[in-house]
Length: 167
Image (spheres, rainbow, N blue to C red):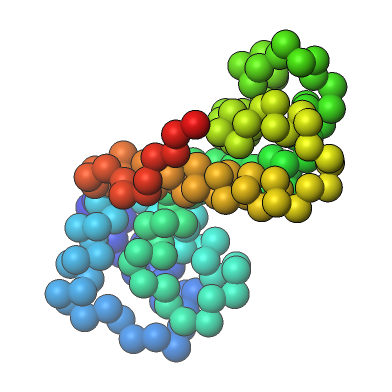
């Protein structure tokens, strides 16, 4: 990251949060080093995204890094989308099918169905609250893991600490 890139980031921070002071030199040096793995445009998109979310105070560096890597990762389905797709696929599937046979819109959705239990989903009533709660827990763990692994890869950090789920 060159001086012009860092100046653009500092200007974006000041423009989005005008009531905040400039970062002290040691803090600015640390932020610059932590933002180094990112493209400047991605860092600026993250800052603008946080401002558009209505953050009242300047975000800390971790929030900017998380938002940047989430933006780079792209759209991930939320649980409601995922569960609806799982239920829809289960209602149209035959007993000999598996999660591998289904055209999932995202791999995390298929993995959630596999870990929860494809036959269990097929046998359950559509509104089963316990199955839905279990599905949510599995999906959110997988989603967090995917996000953490992507962040670690982009930022050159050691692997994630999110536990692996086994079926």
